[in-house]
Amino acid sequence: MAAIGFSTGLYRLTETAPGLPLRLLIVWIIPALGEELPFRGLLLPGRDETRRPWLWVAVSTGLYVAWHPFEALTFLPHATTFLRWDFLLCTAILGLACAAMRLRTGSLWPAVLLHGGFVVIWQTWLGGVSALG
Image (cartoon, rainbow, N blue to C red; front, side, top):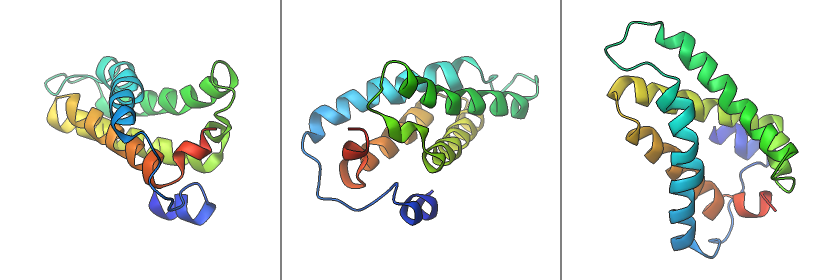
């Protein structure tokens, strides 16, 4: 993800964006928990279930990636970054990593922490706040 983001300008080192305490709270609730619950919590089978987990990983990741352009085209029109190919590719990689964590641990919380941590770092130090308008 770093190679993609830095080579395309999606990620760029910036001064620390203001508002970190509030951002931590908002990011952990809305994108992290709010996206992990439906895309990894509901769609992926439990560790002891046998119904083709990697098929569900593909479905979950595809829907997760598609969700971002839908957001940008409907209720977040300022989030044009969500329409960029490099953002969507990084979103797919993050989705796969979160799905793998969910399947491996059987818990949603490691995926929520990974997702939230990545978004906080992107928004705070890698230009994500300005990229979202």
